[in-house]
Image 1: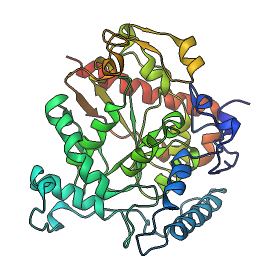
Image 2 (image 1 turned 180 degrees about the vertical axis):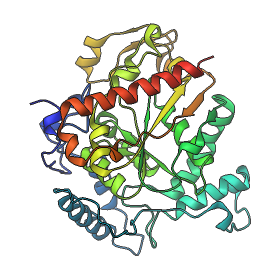
Image 3 (image 1 turned 30 degrees about the vertical axis):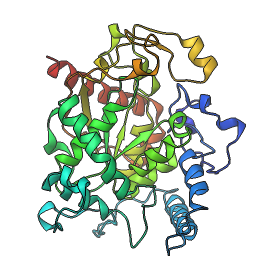
Image 4 (image 1 turned 90 degrees about the vertical axis):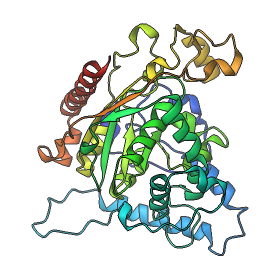
Length: 382
């Protein structure tokens, strides 16, 4: 069965790890074109919430309600109805404008580390969590984000010295897909992109990066990703994020993006088509995004693929510092980043959701996005 004709099979989501869903199964595959029987984020979060009794809200009941709501949304999208002539108000998640945020006086050393603008952005993200819940339906925690932000922002400003352009192409509201190139072994490219969008959007937008199933199965790491707003890459999660009006970051190269050796570091690998299918189904724009610098932060001299497969890892790299310096050899070099956002590609205005069933079309559209991202990289490399 090809990856393109699997897209409409209904996924089965379970919180029990099965032999068919071992981490190695995700390596080298398009997570949006195959059935994933387990969401490692959800599995781990369920285990944690069993022991969190200090909050007055019953969190398991809240999660059950969100699952029931998600099932309702999924069932409603089985058949496409042409847009009505009557304008409907979308029920999208939103954050307030920066000028509408009233900040209290700095409280504690953490607040004093941040500027007023940074505190406003974090305060805006707090609105993503409803009522008195400590985190939203995807696991995002404003409190954890606030504690992690000074570290991420220090890397953004001082270590990687990120510069960016094209912010006007990021939609101010509503669902959209950021499609970026991938590289650098560790996902600092995603982290820098998330910080960049947050600092250059008003209302501030929390970017939801799609995380590979393999990374989502790592104990504690998966919960940290969820608490920072990132989501495991299943078709169901992707669709739900877009239906909720979220900004989603994807790396269509997948694992092949971080496997690139130094001689191919800015030559994009073939884009997978899952994000195109989602864009057509949910009728959302795709914003091409070039990340320049991440491929230089950990140059791979050679990838021992048989060893990686044997160990169930995405890559077994040899770099100038790894494995010679042990785990420290995986730390990124202090290279300069440049992030460029291109003009949105609105395929949904020319094609219907049913066109997502056409393998030739979705492959052609994926190649068009790949060529656009490649052109952004080539134009902006200095």
